[in-house]
Length: 354
Image (tube, rainbow, N blue to C red; front, side):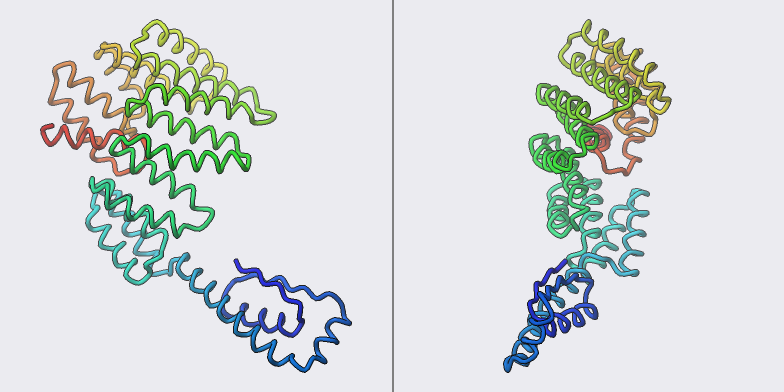
């Protein structure tokens, strides 16, 4: 959005008229008083000033118009992007990429096309090419889409379990939200990063970010009691999984009990599915694969990470056929988030004989 300060009524008026015709720019025109206007009108250099102002306005407004056109997709481009998203959701990444390429040939700075191209390339396993597209998406993203683009880049690094690089982008989002301040949203991003770190083997880093997430959430003013209990559930849930990864069985069970108590107090049915995920997770890392299968079977069967844990549990139990069945279910998921970024590469490798 352009802002041009004018001390001259006629120049200001001309600039305003030009910009209204060519772009949605906002012009701030300052007219001190009537005397100043009359004085300006009597100036022998008025014509020169107006011509100069016209030139400046033309350059500024045409630049704004070009930026607006680059940022906002046309109806045709939007239709192609939607078709591409549908193809991508069906696992047809190559076909989706052809459509995104068509869009970018005509609109090389279109944020949505770069972002969706990066997503499709990640799902194909072409991570370097994906990040080239995602960096372009970050560069041209509108201000209100920067955080989304950065998170998608973080997920891209998660496909290769590069938690350090994922942290670079997630922390930018966290810091932005914290500065608003939007404590609850910032806490969610902290937990998201913590989970990436945990599943990529950085247990201490995960513990630090989960603690940051909980502490940040608690900074929200006048939080309802149910919400406090919900965050207590999440915090205990995280501590139980961390303890399980560290081989601390007693601590894991203690935190499971705390999570259950907090969940009951929260009285939030939507969170109930996350409890068997917790008990199944702890059982898996405790070597109790039969219990893991039973508990994880009660959790969200659309979550690729849970499907991966089920596959690994069957594998550990000596049932490779069922394991492959669940790995195929993972590969059938074409979402682009931390759970699929962690699960999909594992499933692809296992199905390829790795």
